[in-house]
Amino acid sequence: MEPHSPNQDVKIVVTGPYNAGKSEFVQRFGTKPINVAVNGTTVGLDFTHEIIEDYHVHIFGTPGQDHFKDVQQCVARGASGIIMVIDSTDPSTFIQVEALTKRIKAVCGRVPLVVCANKQDKDGAISPDRIKQMIGFKGKVIGTSALRGEGTKTTITEVLKQIRKGQ
Image (cartoon, rainbow, N blue to C red):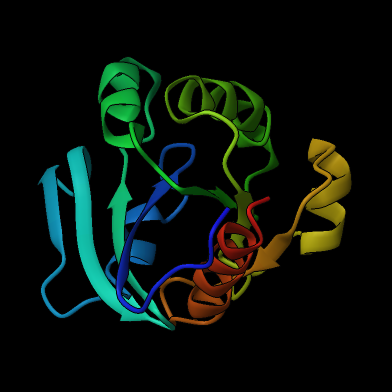
């Protein structure tokens, strides 16, 4: 893969189970993030963009429920990287990660994937290392609190690093 030029467009998709904090994650970036929601639940997509490092990053969030699988795949098309946001206080949702990953990668192919262990600021949060073991993931798992903005930039930066490496 050739090195990226300054301000090159990159599409990153933020996905994950319902109520994991995907919208809150996306809203940490840009100046006017968009959220297509009904009663606080994303039913379309989240979107924002920002210059990060030497990239013009377009960040798209998907709804989390299975009945929005067509929307998830539509939003994911053409992605350069994926951020899988999971609720680190709710291990019952971890089982959804594999199916979501397969669904998203079916339309965007082999692209970098980083797992975001969100809600680390809450009581009962499982550590990123433990989550990595529990879901059998070999890549990076980064602890975040999207609500507080902790770890969100680190997560985006890690995906960009992997994109740059051509991984």
